[in-house]
Image (tube, rainbow, N blue to C red; front, side):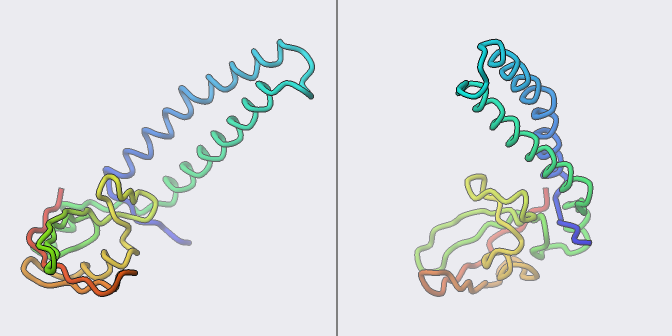
Length: 160
């Protein structure tokens, strides 16, 4: 069975979303369906059909989250970092400097289901993360990007 890796913080975020869907969204949608039914004929009731569609999306996401959380392998980032001090491992936050431009950026290496580039969380399966895993502070990682090869120096590795 495939056990997707998750950080403890990532698992907590998914549990929060699951709780919100079950305690806030689901009752709101049920109420919207009840109100739409009161308007009469369901065949031509756009509010009813929209609420039913929302319900389908909500229930699908609830099932997805429950499946992920029930099979996930939760990894303690601090313990993984203590076992490999200074090395890039799953869950580590890595500060990089692009050698060509001198630009610095920080990413956290996380599981595929919790990756969110807008929050600077990259999937462990991404080309950048694969190039970083196992490297240490001061090492240079070469990444094959769509725009060509990019080189990054690892400035700092944190486990939090």
